[in-house]
Length: 82
Image (spheres, rainbow, N blue to C red):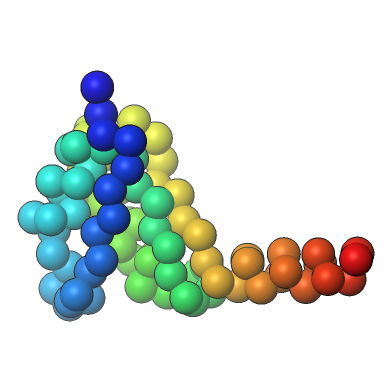
């Protein structure tokens, strides 16, 4: 049974620590990328592409992402409806 979750905090963005990332993907079989950036054009999009290409057979689900912009919009909407 896969692990429920694991946090990998990337210390270096260039090059990606693919050994650590691959070990986590093999253990959990899923990826959620969380970053403080827009959804498109950020480092998370590049990381998602690399993981999808190189570890596709290890994943049980597509790579998912959470971005600070989405949280900011949700927060503004919540405040406007209060």
